[in-house]
Figure 1 (spheres, rainbow, N blue to C red):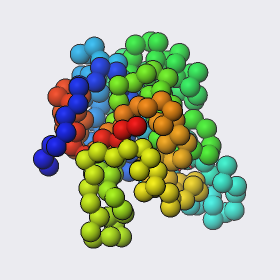
Figure 2 (cartoon, rainbow, N blue to C red):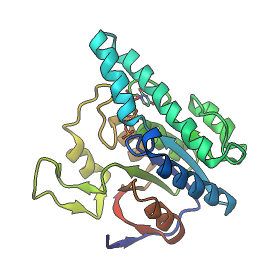
Figure 3 (cartoon, rainbow, N blue to C red):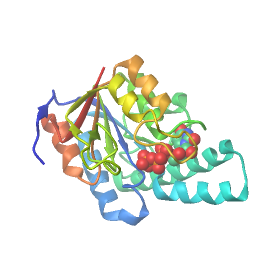
Figure 4 (cartoon, rainbow, N blue to C red):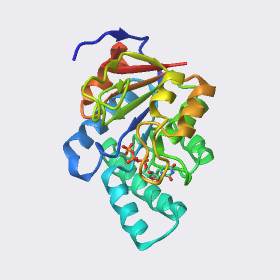
Length: 236
Ligand code: UTP
């Protein structure tokens, strides 16, 4: 993929990895991410990671929704799955370099972050997605960027699965992105890319966000070391 945009390489950043990419079905990829994140820490960069729930969260949520529990309970179960994925990544980073347990709240995160290790989080609270957790953490540590290792390769002006003429955007404002995502549902397990709370936090903190294809670990490497954006930059 060609690079149309370069930014200053970040020194302090948050990476959110989709659970559709980081999960027990892709151990090879988990190991590659673990190695790279460990290397970032060894090079003196300040980073934190958030992991999503992916297909497994959806499976569990689908099952208990069929049983007939509340959306709040579905969310709680989804959070457990994100935390299991977080522990998977912690194993790959090594728990000498990674904080050994995913924090459950922003307060716990900040305590863990002061250890100087890589802190890997799953979800925090029902009613949101891990994108909101990542946005909140990015705001709290005043991150240079929030990198979204997504299952999509970029932001498009409309859903590329539905419209063959959808155009890939190199840069998009958060306001425009809000319009594009407006039709998303906010039921448990159904967020796409950014949930409304994540957008709200990104708007107020003005954290620049980079969306890239999370299956390409090298895109994160090139973003962090060279400031190259293989995807979309979301700006204020
Ligand atoms: P995510 O929404 O983050 O995972 O969490 P996802 O939709 O599978 O996204 P990616 O592609 O992996 O990034 C899974 C579910 O866990 C609950 C929600 O139900 C969410 O849909 N959750 C997660 C919360 O309720 N609160 C959180 O803070 C995080």
